Length: 194
Image (tube, rainbow, N blue to C red):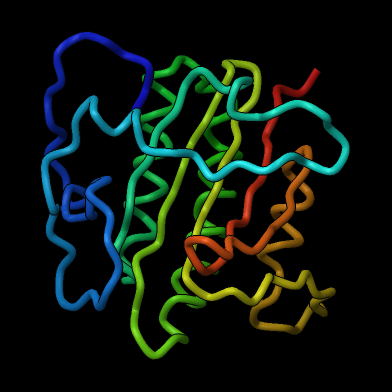
């Protein structure tokens, strides 16, 4: 989960209704109730990381701090994901990246929820946070295999600016299909500004 080895104490917030790493697929209705309590065992959740196009190393080895959480495809999951990112980054001591990471998490989870809800069955949305204390890698999975397309929204457009914002405040971002699990991953890296 977060690289900590001390005892675990559960958080009390409305975001505790998010599904934990127990995973699974299917319909999500009503409030999202935890499948099990969050705990240190989440650090063993596999991270679906592919290489970025301009790097030649395996990225999972570069990210010693890891966290995973799964949310129901509900509008209330967005502020919960944002709060979760803030708390995890504070725990890791990378609060300097927190504000930008929260914005990216908010945009990517919003898009993932919309994509999931457009399907016949509302699948959960999965969020991974990884860090090496200098940068944060954010990965968001949803069950819709269609990759997001960044559009150039006009000033009067009511939506379509999310990926523009992600592109502006991140070092790099991309997306890829996950044929084994179905769906796709959208990921972004936020680094310390020098």
